[in-house]
Image (cartoon, rainbow, N blue to C red; front, side):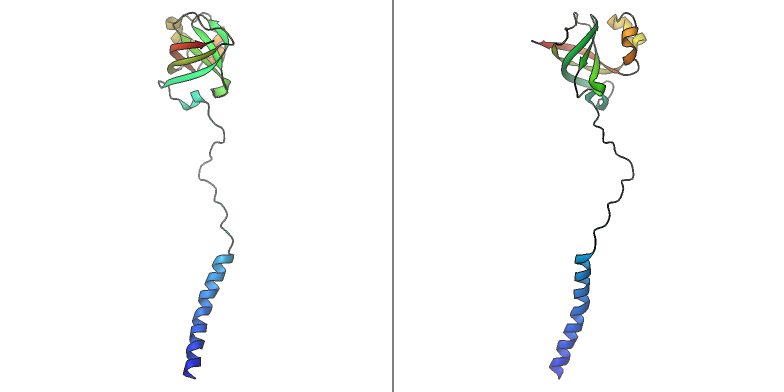
Length: 143
């Protein structure tokens, strides 16, 4: 009889353990919690990720020439697809030439940069005003 009582105790002790294991295996996973701050799903372009004053190298296609010292390049990695390049080395490369430009990211202000780069009339630069541009130290044109 003592042996039977011993087996009964073990069986009773095993029941709660079995219930806990079973409950743990069949519970539904917790619902994903929303992040505390919204995260952007838009991949920022090269220039948008760069800080003003940061050195940058860009390889892109010349889209149009504005003056001897200013031209616009186009590439999908650029913010809004285009970038204004300012260079004191004349002449500017011609479209659709592929160029590699090394320079410094600047805030574009026609009024502030006209003296250094001899930009001419402000009309062609309106779309770039207040945005970013690349002040080039080196422009390499690829044939």
